[in-house]
Each structure stands twice: as C-alpha cells, then as structure tokens.
Image (cartoon, rainbow, N blue to C red; front, side, top):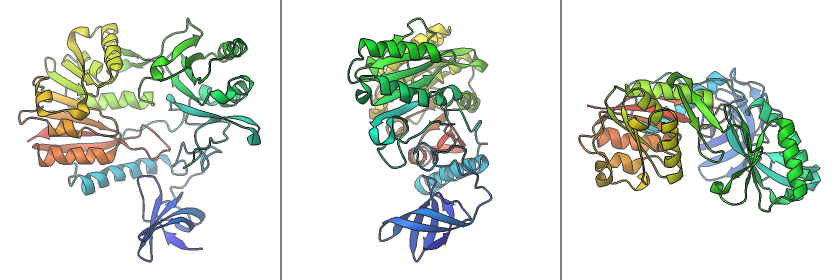
Amino acid sequence: MPTGIIESLDHEARGIARLDGKTIFIEGALPGELVEFEAHRKKPTYEVARLTRVLKPSANRVTPRCPHFGVCGGCSMQHVDMAAQVAAKQRVLEDNLHFLGKTEAEQLFPAIYGSQWGYRHRGRLSVRKVVKKGGVLVGFHERKSSYVAEMAQCPNLPPKLSALIMPLRALVGQLSIAERLPQIEFAVGEHVTVLVLRVLEAPTPADEVLLREFADLHGIVFYLQPKGPASAYRFHPLDAAPLSYTLPEFGIEHFFAPTEFTQVNHAINRVLVRRALRLLDVQPGERIADLFCGLGNFTLPIARCGAEVVGIEGSAELVRRAGENAADNGLADRTQFAVANLFEATPESIAALGRFDKMLIDPPREGAVEVVKSLADDGPSRIVYISCNPSTLARDAAILTHQKGYRLRGAGVVNMFPNTSHVESIALFERG
C-alpha cells in the first residue's frame, strides 16, 4: 500500500501529497500526516485516493461527533478541529486571490465563526423508500452518490430538527404516497419550524390525518409543494406564526417563505451583517446600492443607519417580499427595490441606477463579473463584497484591482457552514 506525507488541503478538504511526480488527492487526510492510501481514480498527472490508515496523525485530527460521518455527504471536515477548519478556509481564500486574482489583500480580517453544531436552519433532506434497508430513509445523500444516507441524527441541525429524522422516516413509511415524496425541505425561524413536503401526488384523506397528528405532536408546521417552489402552501396548522429571523442589533425582523433563500446560519449572519456595515462605514444621507439584495438582509440594516438604499434583485417575488419587510420594519421611506438581471449588467444599466456613494454586492456562486466590469470611473468609493465562492471572488477582484482602480483593503473568511469545505468570505475594496 503506498504512503505519502500530506502537504496541504484542497478546496474539497482532501489532503494533497506528491509522489513520483504526481499530485495525490487523499480524502480524509490532514496536513502533516503520514498516511497509507488507495487510489480509486488515476490520471496521468494526478490521482484521487481514499485514506486507508493514518500512520502519523495530525494534532488537528479529532474524533467526528456524528456516527454517520464518512458515509453521509453533508460534511467533509468533522475530523478537523474548528480552529484548523477556519485556517484551512482562510488558506483557500488567500490562494484563490493570489493564483486566480493575481492580487493580495492588504489586511486579513479576523475570521467570523461561531458554534460548530446545531447551526443549519435551512436545507433539504432527501427521501427514498429502500426495502433492503427496512423502509424509508430520510437524510442527506451519501458522499459522492445519489443514494440517501441511512441516518438517525445530524448534529449540524438544530436539536429539535435532528430528533425528527427517525419519526419522519416512520411517518413517511405510513403514507400512501411514500414513493411519491422525494424530498423534505426545512426552515427554522424564530418562532416556528417548517417542513415542506415535495408531493408528486396529493395525499389521501388518511395521509392528511397522519400529517396533522404528526405536526401537532412535534410542534412543527407542514407545507405541501405539488410543483415548483412557488407552489408550496401551508397545510397544517394554518394559524401558526410566520417564519422570520431577527437582527436584534438593528431592531429588524425579516419574514420569509420556507422555500425562499435565507442564510442557513442565523448566528453567523448577525455577525456578518455587523461586519459588512462596519466596513461600509454607512453615514446618514449616503446613497448606497445593495446588489443581489434578496429579502433585504443587508438593505434594511443599511437603511436603519440612515442611508438611502437601492436594493436590486433578479427575482420579482423576493423584491416584493423585501419591500414588505422594509415597510414592516418602518424603513419604506429609506429603501427602494427593483427587479433586474445583474448577470446581464451593462455600463448603461448600471449608470441608469444613478450614482452611489458605496455599494454592497452579495452574489450567488457565479459572482458579479458583469457588474464589476460595468462600474464607471466615478463609481462608488467603497465596495463590500460578500462571496460564497472564492474563485469567482478572485476573478472579480482582479477586475476591480487591475482595471477599475480599486485597492483590496482586506478580506477574510466567514465560517457559515462549519464541518464542511464550503468557503464564504467578505472583502473590502476602496478607490485609490
């Protein structure tokens, strides 16, 4: 069995070793370790391998808390202590900026991180009836597979939700539509926990009785989704509180539907919003753009600080919801929302929005390349960029720093998804 010394981690949290001129990516190995491995994919210049034995363990290796780690694909870093997880993600961010963006941050911001467990307030569980495994499975997919992992708990979920996995398996197994219910989406709010059942066939009256009994027993709300996300409707109970999350520091409560995008980690989101507004240095009377604004997660706090904010989003439904949230929080007079496809931004479409003192950009994984390419010479003096993909951040940073006259004043990671290799980050750009 070949052995190797691990030099570093890649963006998927695989250990990297060099052997006979090849780069070996070893799942489950950590920097500094001497390991045995078995290759399961061989190419001329690299191999992908699985760890078979740790001969010399890293001091950062810990025992995973979840008994399903290694089978379930929901996590890839539970075997790494939290400080090392954050450090590895910071390294991924720095490497992307250096190698892809050909730039470096003048300052590395302290990492934003919090509790390692019970943080995931939104997500999707797959459902599948597997007779060989005793009935219905409810959980995340197995690692690198379309199979549903056989799981009884998930420590990344809030405890109440984790405790529902086995009861949900039993419930779905009793439904006549057990094989027509492929997923359960979940959303945990301040006052209520919602489960959205994707139903390819309408439940029977007997099914409905079981669903109502389950909701009442476990204190949750069921939605049914017969088609796309917009088709989801509240099934039971009808008089439960609406979903919301709060930003207490700014006196804001955001209401949202269970299939709408919100940050999965409410505690980290609060710290992220605070960091973003501090970096923006919002001043009363300024005109600020919030691009890819969603429900107004950053728009409303910026407005609360006294600025006039224009929120732009591609989804008409999210824009409508953001406007309602602004009104509910007494901020309608300082906010304006518009629908626009920012992936097709042009210098003309950006100019038509008017001049902005500052700008916040929070794009999806694709980044905001057309936006940053379209900024004029008299563009905002300060840009805060929230990223969920370090490679597209690096690409956009290269445009801002090499073509648009901005300096990358600082960047740092946001550990929104502990125990996974997912890297979120925040960066500050300033003119001159």
